[in-house]
Each structure stands twice: as structure tokens, then as C-alpha cells.
Length: 272
Image 1 (cartoon, rainbow, N blue to C red):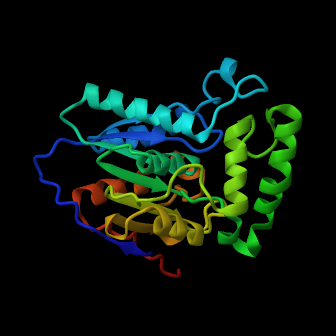
Image 2 (spheres, rainbow, N blue to C red):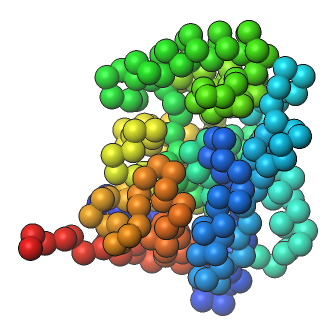
Image 3 (cartoon, rainbow, N blue to C red):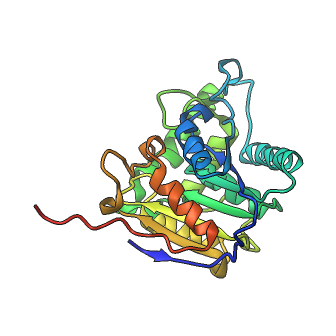
């Protein structure tokens, strides 16, 4: 495990945070109920944000219904503003998972203000940061997404991320080809941040997560934690998606980070 820790200087009397969870691509908020429950068990107020197009079946992406990264960033801004109105006494944190981590970074880089950022399996999908040159991303970003969105006006199932909004998926495809996100990258994010990578994650390899942390965040603000296989509790998972169903280890790391404490590694298993 790699743990590079910062100290946030939290006082014991500080109110527990409100944490807003920005879901991964093509995953609705209900999937994150275990994460919400784990944070609430730790004494935090947690809320999973809605993912456009994957909550109400009447408002899915289509030829006549389109949106961009900035629209989803604006949704986050509205949720942060609402949380601050409702709980003005509490710090507000933003946890982004996968695509949600990209949106969380975009929110911070476009002037959004939260008290802390947590990203889990967050990376830009730039093909050069993936094994074997990210050939699958070159194909997706250079051929499949442009072709399908041109024909259908959106990205249909069963394509990755479908049904996906035309503009958002084309912006994603541009990142896959060039590494350029659809939001500014300077100045870097100065908010205290915990950036989490997952062992053997094909959708956000450790190298891609390291580049995400290096390129978008100010060095002195980032705590890096790599959730290694040997740290996974029995019956749990550190898979790119399935960690959400057994999130206690990630939630514990987030709570310890916010408190300014060392994230304790799980015991390394010994041979029988």
C-alpha cells in the first residue's frame, strides 16, 4: 500500500461533514446506498447525487435530449449550494467515483468551492496512461463514440456508458484521444483532497490515477491512498464498481483522512 498522508488539523469539536457522492458513468444514485449508510454509521451526513439520464427513465439521453460535462458540473454546484443552505454549520465534502471524480475535479477547477475532495477510481481516460497504449480507448474515442453519436444522436446501449448524451460522450472521447479534459486545468485544485486508486483496476489503472492527481491537483493538497488487494476485508471488494457494495474500508480511510489521522493498513495475509 502507498499512503502519503497530510494533516488537516481537524479539531475534535468540529461538526461532522456533509459528503455529497457523485456517481460513476451510467450508474444511478440508488446504487450508492451502502456508501451513504457507511458514512452515516461514522456520524457523517451523506447524500448520493443523481446521475443525469440514469434516474428517471423519462429523461434518458436521446437525439433530442443532450447535455455536456459542464451541465453535470452545474448539477454538482446546485447540490453543494443546497447542502450549504441546509447545513451552514457543517463542512461540505465532495466524493467522486470514476466519471464522478472527473466531474468533481471539473467543479473545483471551474471555481466551485467545497471543504474537501475525495476521488475513488478517478482518472482521465487518456489512452497513453493505460496498458498497451490503451488501444481499446483509441478505438472507443476515435471510432465507436463518434460514429454512434453521429448516427443515433446519442450513445445507445450496449455501448460503454450508454445511453449516453452525445456531447458528454464526445467530450469523453476527446479526452481518450488527447488527454484534454473539457474544463480548464489551471490553476490546479488547492482544496484538501484524498485520491484513491484500486488494485488491478482496468478502468482506472494506478498510473492513470497518479497522472490525474499530478496534473489536476496542487502537490501539497493531495493525500494518495492505494487500496491494495491484501487490504480488502473478507467478503468485500476493491473492484472498480463493486467496492460500492462493501465500502467500509474506503469510508474508514476517508474519515481518518479528514480527521488528519494515519490510514491504517489491513494486515498482510500470511500463508497457511
